[in-house]
Length: 206
Image 1 (cartoon, rainbow, N blue to C red):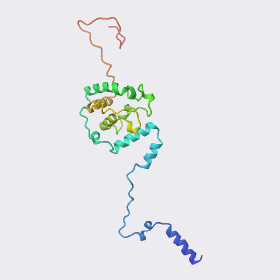
Image 2: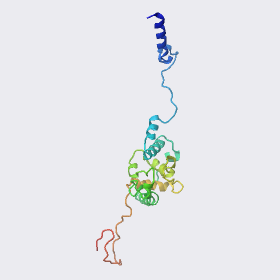
Image 3: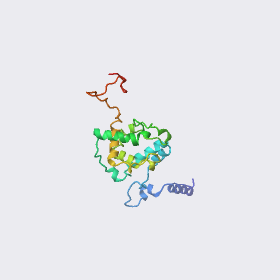
């Protein structure tokens, strides 16, 4: 092969590699650091969201927003001063029945009377409360701000319910959605009216 042709081939090969890939051509003091990427959402997450159904997409977005700290400090640093007392659960049950049950269902299974007309569907609260992300602050933020920013029909309750009331609902969720209307029949005592009608709950006749 003529020397000129060899020279041209070598020159072409040398140009195929960028200068920073050849150690001998690197400037003195240069460090092998990874390039700085812009502060953007990972492409994998965007791909996953674009290919998820509306229910999955809004939940992924909501979880991501909270986990990445893109929530006001008033929620992130909120303290649950209500706790999980019997009184808090009872109060929360009444509030849940009034404001939440028609969409989320009696047992938090997302099957309330209005659920089937909603897309995305209401969250399955019975399962959500057991997830690691569902700390009290997450539930407070979700209930207070609602789902409008994430494309759901979940209304905002921050102007209707105080923080204390919302934490009472949280107490009820964590208690497992107990049936608070199933109370024992009152005991019969002196002066109580006697009846031969069957008890409406047990169908037994005293």
